[in-house]
Amino acid sequence: MSRAALSIIAALALALACATLWGAFQAKRADGWRVAYQAAVAASQANIAATKALRAQERAEYERKADVADAKHAAALDRARALTDVYVRSNRVQPSGSSPAAAIGEAGDAGQPADLSRSAVMVGIDDVRRAAEWQAYGIACHDWALAITAP
Image 1 (cartoon, helix red, strand yellow):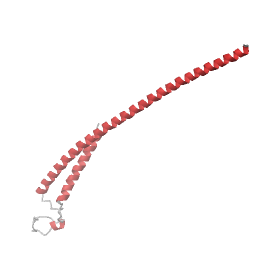
Image 2 (cartoon, rainbow, N blue to C red; image 1 turned 135 degrees about the horizontal axis):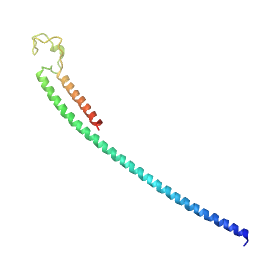
Image 3 (tube, rainbow, N blue to C red; image 1 turned 120 degrees about the vertical axis):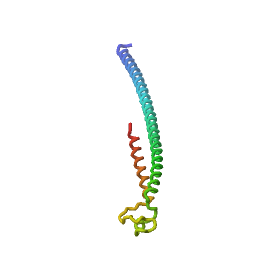
Image 4 (cartoon, rainbow, N blue to C red; image 1 turned 180 degrees about the horizontal axis):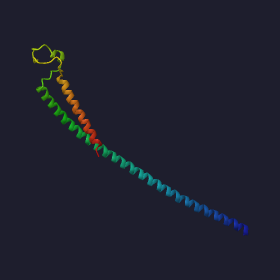
């Protein structure tokens, strides 16, 4: 063989070796990318699972606080209703359905004291009860808002 042929064969062998090494390098690099991608996917899935668990825990905590607030509100509402009934019995609150004008009639009308002033403000039983219930509701809302914002 001639020297030129040997040079060509050597060059081809060198090119084949370089191509083989380059292919092996790229395969190794692709394996590294695959491993890195799989690790990123696993980390992302773990992050999603942790976020879901945290949200479930926070939701359970808010639901527990809401249940406590509901129980406190029910107790406060019962207490307000009982105190309203005591107030109605002890303060001659006007019965529901009667008009204030009729209640402030002439002195000596049945059921009306003689010293009742025409400027007296008459409130019905239903209005007193509604006011007490809304007050209990407002206090319960305030307490609930404090409970969910407390650390």
